[in-house]
Amino acid sequence: MEEEIDLRAYVAVLLRNWMWIVGLAAVAAVAALGVSFLIPPTYEATALVAITEPRYMMRFDPRFETMTNVKPAYKAYPELASSDDLLQSLLTSLAPLPEGVETSQDLQGMLQAEQGADPSMVRLVCRYQEPEEAARVANVWAALFVSRANEIYGTQGEPQVQFFESQLVQKQAELETAEQALVAFQARNQGAVLQAQLASVQQDLQDYLVEQREIERVVRNAWALQASMAGQPADERVSPGDDLTALLLEIQAFNVQASRPLQMAQTSQTAQTTQATSLGAGVEAGPSVWLQISDATLLASGRTAGELAAFLDRLVATLEARREDITAQVATLGPQILALQQQLQQTQTEEDRLVRTRDVAQETYVTVARKVEEVRIAAEDSSGDVRLASQAAVPHRPVSPRKMLNAAVAGVLGLTLGVCGVFAVEWWRGEGETGRQGDKETGG
Image (cartoon, rainbow, N blue to C red):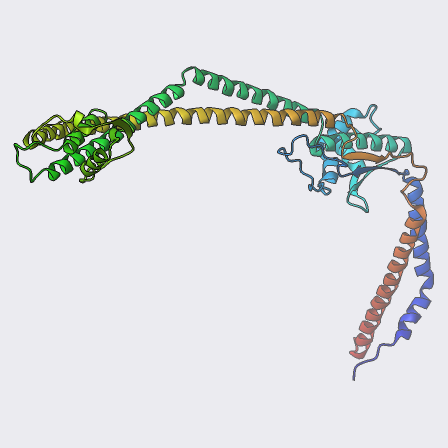
């Protein structure tokens, strides 16, 4: 069975030595109270700084986006308040310096920056032996911190204005350079000349192709007329209709560029029948200008079939030569058109590039100019996003030393130490008696 612990023995020990325990606790409390009276009092002054979100965002140009969803870096503000640079500025600004403060490390021992119950509130605490000095140091520290925080995290201020003004000067110089480049290009721009040359060469090509098509049609008509006279004897006179058709083919051959070839119409029924017969023998007729005569025999030459066939051969040979010349001309116009198109495209590409550069420089300049006006107006708002919420007042009661609290804590510690000491003495005595009893039993 487990051995039961008898608490009565412990209580008996405490009762036998209560005077020692109480006396030790009293001595400790009195000693702590005496030491607390000897320690100089320390006063605490607290200044409050609030980090606010912007109440409005100016946007003179929607293309220059103003960030509206940026959250303040709340955790960074206490570290900024305790930075060496800010403490050095505080040391320089304090005149005269508080007694015993010579370096920024001395200031760091008296100052404490911490977040309040809300992250947007920063508490700047200064502890010092003199209440007026504590309040003065806390207020100077808060003013420097507000200025530095707005300078670093703020969106307005003289540095912002200077930055955008320098950008405006740079963008204005770029715009002037782009405009001068465009002006210089227009002084040597051959676009209109090349466009006119290209249009002229293209028109020549179109005219040659139309003439070539008309020549092919006249040649086909001549072959058709020859085919219609293939069965006639060479010495037989041709009909007035065939002779008139040959005349029309000759007119078309020397006027192939005319859009409406000349044809003839007769007033009498007999003449109309003759024309229809002659033109319907496989000869193609296009849009025509009608020349009205009374009798087709008036234009007949009286040629024989052989003479007309020889005439048609010469006419076809002449037209074939002309067609070959046109083909050669068309072959030379192709490279000219391609070369002119290339030069024109190069000119247009260079012009487009210069115009695009000028337009981008102009848009950038206007945007930055509007931003400069925006930051100038915003810089006039001196409140900033970080503001002094409350200045430190002169404290009237010290925060340390807390005499009664120190005496109570020392009394508790003395009481605990006395209890532990009593039990340690009793244990030592018990060990000693046990040792002496063992010596008696062994006859020592």
